[in-house]
Length: 224
Image (tube, rainbow, N blue to C red; front, side, top):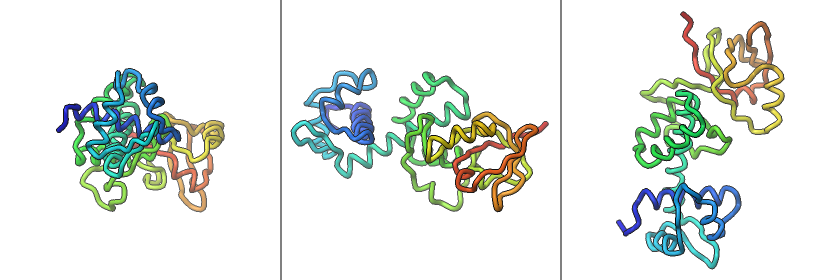
Protein backbone atom coordinates (compact mmCIF):
# COMPACT_ATOMS: atom_id res chain seq x y z
CA UNK A 1 0.00 0.00 0.00
CA UNK A 2 1.25 3.52 -0.79
CA UNK A 3 1.55 6.40 1.65
CA UNK A 4 -2.11 7.26 1.03
CA UNK A 5 -4.41 5.54 3.52
CA UNK A 6 -6.89 3.24 1.80
CA UNK A 7 -9.82 4.94 3.52
CA UNK A 8 -8.78 8.27 2.02
CA UNK A 9 -8.25 6.68 -1.37
CA UNK A 10 -11.78 5.25 -1.24
CA UNK A 11 -13.25 8.63 -0.34
CA UNK A 12 -11.47 10.27 -3.26
CA UNK A 13 -12.63 7.54 -5.65
CA UNK A 14 -16.17 7.94 -4.29
CA UNK A 15 -16.04 11.68 -4.90
CA UNK A 16 -14.71 11.27 -8.43
CA UNK A 17 -17.46 8.73 -9.19
CA UNK A 18 -20.11 11.10 -7.82
CA UNK A 19 -18.73 13.94 -9.94
CA UNK A 20 -18.89 11.69 -12.97
CA UNK A 21 -22.55 10.92 -12.22
CA UNK A 22 -23.18 14.67 -12.46
CA UNK A 23 -21.22 14.95 -15.71
CA UNK A 24 -18.19 16.66 -14.14
CA UNK A 25 -14.61 15.44 -14.31
CA UNK A 26 -12.62 18.63 -13.72
CA UNK A 27 -9.99 18.08 -11.01
CA UNK A 28 -10.57 21.51 -9.47
CA UNK A 29 -14.32 20.90 -9.24
CA UNK A 30 -13.75 17.55 -7.56
CA UNK A 31 -11.49 19.18 -4.98
CA UNK A 32 -13.96 21.98 -4.28
CA UNK A 33 -16.90 19.61 -3.77
CA UNK A 34 -15.15 17.20 -1.40
CA UNK A 35 -15.67 19.55 1.56
CA UNK A 36 -15.32 17.94 4.96
CA UNK A 37 -15.79 14.42 3.62
CA UNK A 38 -12.14 14.20 2.53
CA UNK A 39 -10.52 17.54 3.40
CA UNK A 40 -7.47 19.00 1.77
CA UNK A 41 -6.87 16.91 -1.37
CA UNK A 42 -4.23 18.18 -3.72
CA UNK A 43 -2.76 17.31 -7.07
CA UNK A 44 -0.41 14.87 -5.34
CA UNK A 45 -3.36 12.79 -4.11
CA UNK A 46 -4.69 12.39 -7.63
CA UNK A 47 -1.22 11.57 -8.96
CA UNK A 48 -0.91 8.89 -6.30
CA UNK A 49 -4.24 7.41 -7.37
CA UNK A 50 -2.98 7.49 -10.96
CA UNK A 51 0.20 5.68 -9.91
CA UNK A 52 -2.01 3.02 -8.29
CA UNK A 53 -3.77 2.56 -11.63
CA UNK A 54 -7.10 3.84 -10.33
CA UNK A 55 -7.47 7.14 -12.21
CA UNK A 56 -6.29 8.87 -15.37
CA UNK A 57 -5.33 12.54 -15.35
CA UNK A 58 -5.47 14.46 -18.60
CA UNK A 59 -4.94 18.17 -18.07
CA UNK A 60 -7.69 19.31 -15.70
CA UNK A 61 -9.73 16.14 -16.15
CA UNK A 62 -9.62 13.11 -13.87
CA UNK A 63 -11.43 9.91 -14.78
CA UNK A 64 -11.59 6.47 -13.22
CA UNK A 65 -9.80 3.55 -14.81
CA UNK A 66 -11.63 0.23 -15.02
CA UNK A 67 -10.04 -0.84 -11.73
CA UNK A 68 -10.86 2.51 -10.14
CA UNK A 69 -14.46 2.31 -11.30
CA UNK A 70 -14.87 -1.13 -9.72
CA UNK A 71 -13.46 0.16 -6.42
CA UNK A 72 -15.57 3.32 -6.53
CA UNK A 73 -18.79 1.44 -7.30
CA UNK A 74 -18.12 -0.80 -4.32
CA UNK A 75 -17.77 2.18 -1.97
CA UNK A 76 -20.84 3.89 -3.44
CA UNK A 77 -22.85 0.66 -3.16
CA UNK A 78 -21.92 0.15 0.50
CA UNK A 79 -22.62 3.79 1.36
CA UNK A 80 -26.02 3.99 -0.30
CA UNK A 81 -27.20 0.63 1.03
CA UNK A 82 -26.14 1.73 4.51
CA UNK A 83 -28.17 4.91 4.07
CA UNK A 84 -31.21 2.80 3.24
CA UNK A 85 -30.60 0.56 6.24
CA UNK A 86 -30.28 3.40 8.74
CA UNK A 87 -33.04 5.59 7.32
CA UNK A 88 -35.70 3.05 6.33
CA UNK A 89 -35.32 0.28 8.89
CA UNK A 90 -33.66 1.95 11.88
CA UNK A 91 -35.36 5.32 11.36
CA UNK A 92 -32.27 7.42 12.10
CA UNK A 93 -32.21 11.11 11.21
CA UNK A 94 -30.68 12.05 7.88
CA UNK A 95 -27.55 13.41 9.54
CA UNK A 96 -27.04 10.36 11.76
CA UNK A 97 -27.69 7.99 8.85
CA UNK A 98 -25.16 9.82 6.67
CA UNK A 99 -22.49 9.72 9.39
CA UNK A 100 -22.99 6.00 9.95
CA UNK A 101 -23.02 5.32 6.21
CA UNK A 102 -19.66 7.09 5.88
CA UNK A 103 -18.23 4.60 8.38
CA UNK A 104 -19.92 1.49 6.99
CA UNK A 105 -18.74 2.16 3.44
CA UNK A 106 -15.22 1.30 4.56
CA UNK A 107 -15.86 -1.75 6.75
CA UNK A 108 -18.60 -3.88 5.16
CA UNK A 109 -17.34 -7.03 3.48
CA UNK A 110 -18.80 -8.02 0.12
CA UNK A 111 -20.74 -10.83 1.82
CA UNK A 112 -22.17 -8.48 4.44
CA UNK A 113 -23.01 -5.93 1.75
CA UNK A 114 -24.97 -8.50 -0.25
CA UNK A 115 -26.79 -9.58 2.91
CA UNK A 116 -27.83 -5.99 3.64
CA UNK A 117 -28.93 -5.59 0.03
CA UNK A 118 -31.02 -8.77 0.18
CA UNK A 119 -32.47 -7.76 3.56
CA UNK A 120 -33.62 -4.48 2.01
CA UNK A 121 -35.12 -6.15 -1.05
CA UNK A 122 -32.38 -5.02 -3.47
CA UNK A 123 -33.32 -1.30 -3.52
CA UNK A 124 -32.47 0.46 -6.81
CA UNK A 125 -31.88 3.89 -5.26
CA UNK A 126 -30.66 5.52 -2.05
CA UNK A 127 -32.92 7.82 0.03
CA UNK A 128 -31.78 10.74 -2.16
CA UNK A 129 -32.85 9.03 -5.39
CA UNK A 130 -29.34 8.15 -6.57
CA UNK A 131 -28.76 4.75 -8.16
CA UNK A 132 -27.29 1.95 -6.06
CA UNK A 133 -24.84 -0.11 -8.15
CA UNK A 134 -26.21 -3.67 -8.24
CA UNK A 135 -24.31 -6.63 -6.85
CA UNK A 136 -24.23 -10.33 -7.66
CA UNK A 137 -27.04 -10.88 -5.14
CA UNK A 138 -29.41 -8.70 -7.16
CA UNK A 139 -29.63 -11.29 -9.93
CA UNK A 140 -29.70 -14.36 -7.69
CA UNK A 141 -32.84 -16.47 -7.45
CA UNK A 142 -32.08 -17.92 -4.03
CA UNK A 143 -30.77 -16.43 -0.83
CA UNK A 144 -30.25 -17.53 2.74
CA UNK A 145 -31.42 -14.13 3.96
CA UNK A 146 -35.15 -13.41 4.07
CA UNK A 147 -35.85 -9.89 2.82
CA UNK A 148 -37.44 -7.52 5.31
CA UNK A 149 -38.32 -5.15 2.49
CA UNK A 150 -39.68 -6.38 -0.84
CA UNK A 151 -41.08 -4.96 -4.02
CA UNK A 152 -44.87 -4.79 -4.09
CA UNK A 153 -45.12 -7.34 -6.97
CA UNK A 154 -43.61 -9.98 -4.64
CA UNK A 155 -45.64 -9.05 -1.56
CA UNK A 156 -48.15 -11.76 -0.47
CA UNK A 157 -51.81 -11.19 -1.30
CA UNK A 158 -53.99 -10.41 1.68
CA UNK A 159 -51.14 -9.38 3.98
CA UNK A 160 -50.63 -5.95 5.50
CA UNK A 161 -47.46 -4.01 4.81
CA UNK A 162 -46.02 -0.57 5.34
CA UNK A 163 -44.57 1.35 2.42
CA UNK A 164 -40.89 1.88 3.19
CA UNK A 165 -39.83 3.78 0.09
CA UNK A 166 -40.81 4.47 -3.50
CA UNK A 167 -38.27 4.63 -6.34
CA UNK A 168 -40.16 6.12 -9.31
CA UNK A 169 -38.62 6.38 -12.76
CA UNK A 170 -40.45 9.66 -13.28
CA UNK A 171 -40.76 12.35 -10.61
CA UNK A 172 -44.38 13.22 -11.36
CA UNK A 173 -45.39 9.71 -10.33
CA UNK A 174 -44.65 10.61 -6.72
CA UNK A 175 -47.21 13.42 -6.87
CA UNK A 176 -49.85 11.15 -8.39
CA UNK A 177 -49.22 8.42 -5.84
CA UNK A 178 -49.29 10.93 -2.99
CA UNK A 179 -52.71 12.12 -4.15
CA UNK A 180 -53.91 8.52 -3.74
CA UNK A 181 -52.36 8.23 -0.28
CA UNK A 182 -49.59 5.94 -1.53
CA UNK A 183 -46.66 7.44 0.36
CA UNK A 184 -43.85 6.08 2.57
CA UNK A 185 -45.26 5.16 5.97
CA UNK A 186 -48.72 4.24 4.71
CA UNK A 187 -50.10 0.83 5.62
CA UNK A 188 -51.51 -1.14 2.71
CA UNK A 189 -53.18 -4.47 2.08
CA UNK A 190 -52.63 -6.07 -1.33
CA UNK A 191 -55.81 -7.58 -2.81
CA UNK A 192 -54.87 -8.43 -6.41
CA UNK A 193 -52.02 -8.20 -8.92
CA UNK A 194 -53.74 -8.55 -12.29
CA UNK A 195 -54.71 -6.83 -14.50
CA UNK A 196 -53.84 -4.02 -12.06
CA UNK A 197 -52.53 -3.99 -8.50
CA UNK A 198 -55.38 -3.27 -6.10
CA UNK A 199 -54.44 -1.88 -2.70
CA UNK A 200 -56.47 -1.08 0.36
CA UNK A 201 -55.19 2.03 2.13
CA UNK A 202 -57.28 2.87 5.19
CA UNK A 203 -60.85 3.11 3.96
CA UNK A 204 -59.78 3.62 0.35
CA UNK A 205 -59.15 1.10 -2.42
CA UNK A 206 -56.86 2.15 -5.27
CA UNK A 207 -55.69 0.47 -8.50
CA UNK A 208 -52.07 0.88 -9.62
CA UNK A 209 -50.40 0.06 -12.92
CA UNK A 210 -48.02 -2.96 -12.66
CA UNK A 211 -45.02 -0.88 -13.77
CA UNK A 212 -45.60 1.62 -10.98
CA UNK A 213 -46.23 -1.18 -8.48
CA UNK A 214 -42.70 -2.40 -9.21
CA UNK A 215 -41.36 0.90 -7.89
CA UNK A 216 -43.05 0.54 -4.47
CA UNK A 217 -41.19 -1.28 -1.68
CA UNK A 218 -42.96 -2.51 1.44
CA UNK A 219 -42.23 -4.17 4.77
CA UNK A 220 -44.59 -6.71 6.28
CA UNK A 221 -46.51 -5.53 9.33
CA UNK A 222 -47.07 -8.12 12.02
CA UNK A 223 -50.57 -7.76 13.45
CA UNK A 224 -50.97 -8.44 17.15
